[in-house]
Image 1 (cartoon, rainbow, N blue to C red):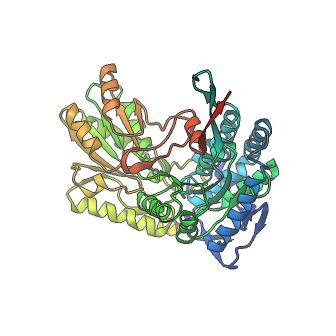
Image 2: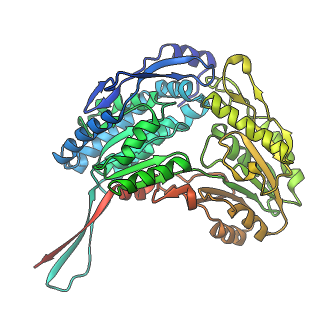
Image 3: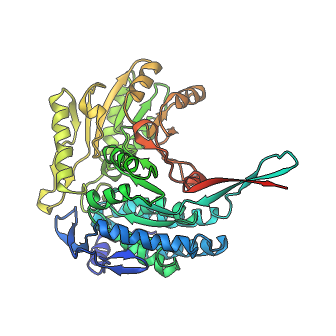
Length: 498
C-alpha cells in the first residue's frame, strides 16, 4: 500500500465510520447488559467512540450460535473449495478496504501509519489467503496394514474455538488466529483487546460480506477479566487460543483445568536477546537491524530484542552506530508517515515504561540516549527511544519484559558467556544472532533456547514458518505455517476390517 501524506491521513481519520456492536450469530448487536466502554486515541488522549461491552451471558449466547453452526455443518462440512473461495474473498476485501483499516488501526492503537499501511494490513489479507490456499492441502494418511485391516488417520475440526487477541497488533493477530481456525472448519468466538477493538469489528463486517455463514464467526468486545475468564471457564469450548502476557496465559490454563481441560494454545511474553559477535564486519547493517528489533512498534512487541549482547571488543564502536541509527527514528503523530514511533497504548502503560527507565538508572545503568516522555502537549503517550549502557544481567531492565522502547546493552568476552546471558531468562520466544562465521551461526543458533532464531537479521520468519516460543513464552502453540492449521484439528484413527 503506497503511503500518502500526513494531511491526507488526518482528513481520512475524520471521515471514518465505526461499527461498535458485537457480532453474534451473523448479526451486529448490543451486549445483553447494555453497557458500553470508551476507546481512546493513544496519540491525543481523546475519545474515539463508545463500544458495546459484552458479558458472560453474551459468551454463552455466542457459543450456542457457534455450536449450532458447527453441528449443522454449514461451514465445517462445506466443500474445501467453497471455504477457500470465501476466505480468499475476505483477503481481497481487506486489501480493497486497506487504507480505511490502516487509518482506523493507527488512531485506535497509536501504531504508526508507516507500519500499518505497509505491514499489518497487507499481512492480514495475505494471511487469510495463505491459509485458504492451504486448507485443502492438509492430507490424511494410511499406515501399512496387516492385510486384514485398513487403517486411516484423519484430521477433523475441533469444533468451537475461542481466541483472545492482544492490543499491540490488533487486526494482524486476529488474522493469525482466525485464518487457520476457520480454514480448518471450526467455528470461532473472538475477543479483541478492549483497548483496540475497532478493526476486529470491521473485519467481522468484511467476513460477513465475504460469505462466512451466520454463527461461524462471533466477535465479543469488552473486558478481558469478564469475557476472557468466561471463555477460559466455558465447559463446551474445544480450544482457546491466546496471545498476550504470560501472567494472563497462566490464568487461562488454570481456567481450563477447572472445567473441561480444553486445548489451550498460548503465545506469551519475551525478553529477547540480540547477540553481536566480534567477527561482524558490517556493523552498520547490524546496528540498523538491532534498532529495528527493539524500537519497532514502540517496543510493544513480544519479540522485541530489548537485550543487546555485544562482544566487549566492539561494544563502543557498535553502540555509537546504534545511537546514530536510533536518531533516525522520529517519534510523533502516528498518522504522519515520517514517524517510525507512535504513542504507547495507554497512559498507565506509559507510566510503567517510565518507571522501568527510572529503575534502570537507580540500579546503575548508564542512560546514553533518550529516557523521557515527550510531546506532552499533544495529550498522547509518547516516550522517546531509550538506550542504557553498562547493564548487567541481574538488573531489572535486563530481566523483565518492559514492552516499551527501552534497550539494555550488555557485553561478553566469550561465546559461552553470550549464550549463558541470552538463555538466562524465563522466556524463549525469539533471538537474533549476528556473525560472519558460518560454523558459529549454526552452533549458536542451535544453542539459543528460542522458538525463532534469526541470523544476520531481525525477523520472526514468514507465513510459512511456525511462530511460537519455548519456556514461558509459549504453550502448545504455533502461529503461521501448516502447524497452525494442524493445531486446530483433532486426529482420529479409523481401523477397519476388510
